[in-house]
Length: 149
Image (tube, rainbow, N blue to C red):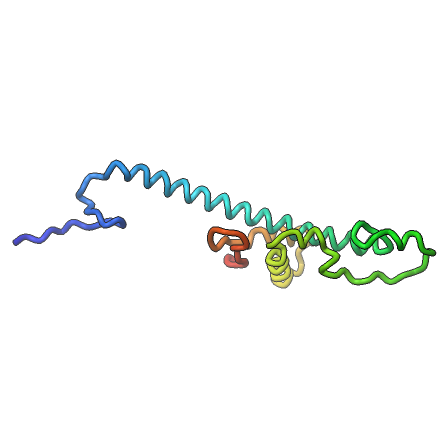
């Protein structure tokens, strides 16, 4: 009895068999999936950069407009002008950042990038943070950071 030496491919089909009509469809679907995953990675990075920027701008706005702003109200402008120390920005003041479910993950990455690259200009921090995101899989809030550092 002669033994066959044909090899099987990833779908269990012998490599000596001709490709099925579905082979092209599967290849197209796989290529499409890879393109979509690449696009998702780009969008995750863009989102992380945007969230870090919003957080920074929001903090600057809240600190610079301590006597009155759209978050805390404008009563401070109506009172006598007194040298008042600014109050620290709290989480509940950050209505724009808190509107995102992933902003805390973006800030964690920015913090780690700040530690790894302390001599970068502040605007470069966001670019470095954006380059360090790698998605883990489909779904919201599914990215992790600093894989390629």
